[in-house]
Length: 147
Image: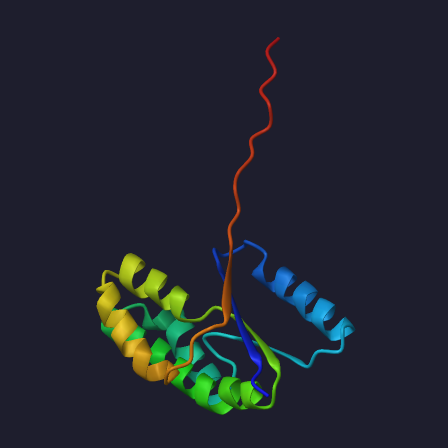
């Protein structure tokens, strides 16, 4: 039985972690076997790569180096954790996936979207989410009082 692969994307502070935990609880309460994981990270090797990426002392890291490190972390994560869990029929909920790389490495870091897609095509080895949920916050201002 093939599992279900759900990715959660969104801006920082949009409540991804909270919604992931609520979704996990909902599914587990209904007898589903759920694995929650994150990117970058998710495996010992991927966590080491995450540490390199997020280390503020590496601020001089080039955009392409960063993109390749994210893809390397993802390749390890997919092969070691995500694909085996899906093969066991689990529901995998992943906090961020390829869409985050497209946003951060192409839009924010100036690399072409096609380049990021091509790099990640190899990293994910054909794996695509069954569904991606995007969380976003909207700012609602309080009504202005006129005196």
